Structure formats: C-alpha cells, structure tokens
Length: 247
Image (cartoon, rainbow, N blue to C red; front, side, top):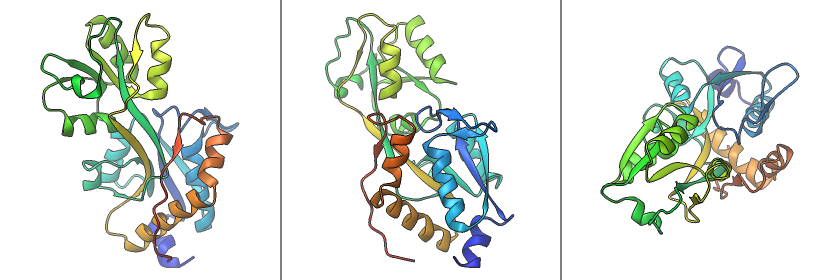
C-alpha cells in the first residue's frame, strides 16, 4: 500500500469514516463499545484494514449531514448513497449494495402504476434530502413533494394529511404498512438507492483504490457475507459488479 494513498485517505493516521445512522439496513445495531454496527461500518473497517490504519467512525443523523461534512473536511471516507447533487462535492466509488425505493399507498387508492403517482394533485410525503428525495426532485414533473425531517415525520404527515403516497425504502414501507389497514406497498420501484463509498474530490489514487476495493468486495463475496452477517438478506442486494483496472 503506497504512502501517497495513506496520506490521501488517512491524513491524520486514522481513517475517519462518516456513517449515515438513519439507514436502518446499513446500521442496525451497536458494538459492545457503543460504536455503530452493520454493513456500512464493517465496509469502513475493511478499508481501514486494507490501508493498515486504525478506524474512527463518525456517526451522522442523516445523509444530508454526511454530505455537509464533506465541505468541512470532517471525514476521509463516507458511506452514503451516490447522487448527482452530492457528487458536486464528493467523489463516489461504484455502488456496493442497493435498496429499492417505492411508494406506500393508502387504503382505497386509485393509483395502480408508478407512472400514475406523478400526476397533478398527488402529494407525496418524503424525507428531506434522502437519496430518493433527490431522485424524485429531479424526475417528478406533476406531483407535489411534502418534505419532512425524518421517516417517522413522513409517515405521520402521510396519515394526518391524508396524502396520496409515502415515498421510502421498500423494507421500511413494508413495516409501516402493517399498521395501516388496507394500505399497499407498490410492487414497482421508482429507483434503486445505491450505496457507495465517497471521498473528497481531486484525489485520483484514492478514487482508483476505492473503485478497486468495491469491485473486489463484490466479486470476493465480502458484501454478500456482510449482508448475511447482519440479517438484512432480502432487504439489501449486492450491487452489480463494475469491473475496474487494477491499481
């Protein structure tokens, strides 16, 4: 491992990894020392081990907060969904896993397809600055987004204001639907939220290293093993392999 790479990715001698605590599929527990546990922290640990440095996990309340941390140089890598808006300040690896995003519809809804959701008069509750909010902002033409600060708030607004749809990750929506008699989670998804590893832009050797790391982690079975280890099989999926040139 080159010293140039270590200086780029761990300039303090410790790899500081920004972790999005709001994604309950990627962070679904904590260690005996109180650190976040899950697929995301374990991927960060594997990177630190490959670099031969110690790891420091930096928990953030949500993905928007992780993205803001890039502007302040608070972290060295960040496990976060790659989106065009975030890519303005973060350099992303290929995705290592993905989660389908879709809609929950209330009982008696007349909506029968994903396309029909994007209609005039349709109001969609969505968590502000979530990856799927960014996608919807870029792609919806007619529906109205009703943004909230958390998924719990989105669910409450969806119920209290009798909105036409609730946007979210399929596993969470399936859980929410259990408490809403007659509600339906759509079979189709509007996008797949792909989880990637970000670093600060302008570091070509770091970019190549993270691309190669993700490719090897998928092909070696590491990502699938972590999905199995943390019992999120069927909720998280391994992203398609992206072949990269060797370092």
